[in-house]
Image (cartoon, rainbow, N blue to C red; front, side):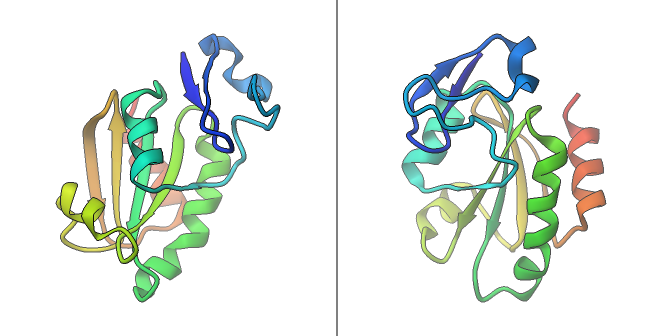
Length: 141
């Protein structure tokens, strides 16, 4: 399985059975899983979607959005429960409007679950930690 490092963005090859063993990057020696969502930009989102083999859950949000700010801690907590089965990331649509347009984000917050570079599901509106985890598990088996 190919995993981009959340720190130096190097691709790491790792057997799937070793995901839960707290693997580290072969280049920078930092943990491959941090228990926190990654702040994604256009290049890091593309890297995780096109080269990474782990499912990716992206929170499309904006700093001025009250429901987005309200959901942020729940999304961060969900990362501690969902990793290493999938990677969680955040895209600030105010700073990166081209990504919001590319993925047809019409309202925020919007969660989009990707696998193999393709969208599997999306959910708009703020969710609690439990709702995020339940929704992901119902979409991704």
